[in-house]
Length: 124
Image (cartoon, rainbow, N blue to C red; front, side, top):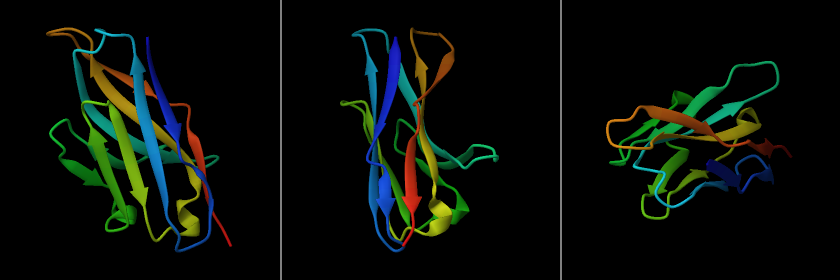
């Protein structure tokens, strides 16, 4: 079984910073490849949107709204991912979700896994 656990959310003032972390927890041997890892965010009544994505080779993609403010990173050995969020704005307030695409065996399909989400609130 695979679990994604987010941490690091909370309340911050506009202009401040937060660092989100995501850890992939799994029994030994059930992950053949940990492929793309991503952060999404969602506000009530709206769809879940991609914030940033990082491939296993650390190629990154960002939503236009967070470019030059957010930085995604990963540690392949530790199976962790982080999102450094700087210059936060009230519009960044949302629940943030960690996602990972995992291949369980050679030649197998990619399977998407999600964390339970963590709240980030930007307010004075």
